[in-house]
Image: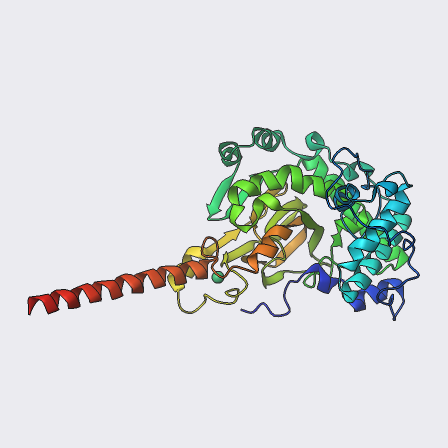
Length: 399
Ligand SMILES: [Zn+2]
């Protein structure tokens, strides 16, 4: 098995090639382009401490290259004279600051992606606008809502099963919500076909499917992560940043005739992945899991520890409306959907805090099967060495 050329970060998806296809501009925006609006006030400095009394503007309705919550937080640090200027000026001021922290290639990418989203939003007519606003009673089944409301490990366990360590499955979405989302996805595909608009696919493994965040569902999915997935992840995935999930990549994948057939063995670019089947009628398409691994050990484990691997083998058959929640580093793939048509909603939840911290860590034995095996191995040989030393000393004192 190999992970080369497998799944990837959204960055690779939005590679210069993909960006060019969208904008038709082979040269891109030069790095540090000074013609960008918003440079008027960049000589002003941010405050050292936030102004806690100031109530920031709402940025949720804007298509920006950074999350709207970043703008709301940063606004409290703006120079006092900037707090009362029009919102667009504030946005430009903050964008200039934020973009400075991105390397030139990333600045270019962020700009291109913003333009790409704007193009979709201004051209695509959504069928079901009610999907854009989080509406818990319409979206989720009552038992799920109750468990989240109670917000305890016990309440979560009461609606979940954990058929294999670290894999949780539970009833989540209302059939009506699945239906609406499926019909919206059909509408995307129809629009894409009619307009010949070249959309970015969700990742390098899928030729079909769409990024929901690009079609106006970003805020709703952010609320889904914050209000519903983070509380669960805080309990079950704390060691991979479950309590600090702060960004997401939300998309749908489609399998079956005239769609993708299967997905190869891979890991996700996420700390926690939510995977919910939306329907419709299909056979095949089972998920297969093969243990959780850190970056260093992602390709290990097939030959040496067959017993360990056997314990890590788990296959799951999708049921519409039912969710699977697992660590992004839990290696998995999807078998061929042999008949019918299957669509799944995927939410890759990420924690920037965890990603920063993991750079300073080497041992991931709390969740990496291979790190854990190595640790146990070290402990075993340490005990054996100590024992040998004791025998030697006993032998010496006896003579
Ligand atoms: Zn490891």
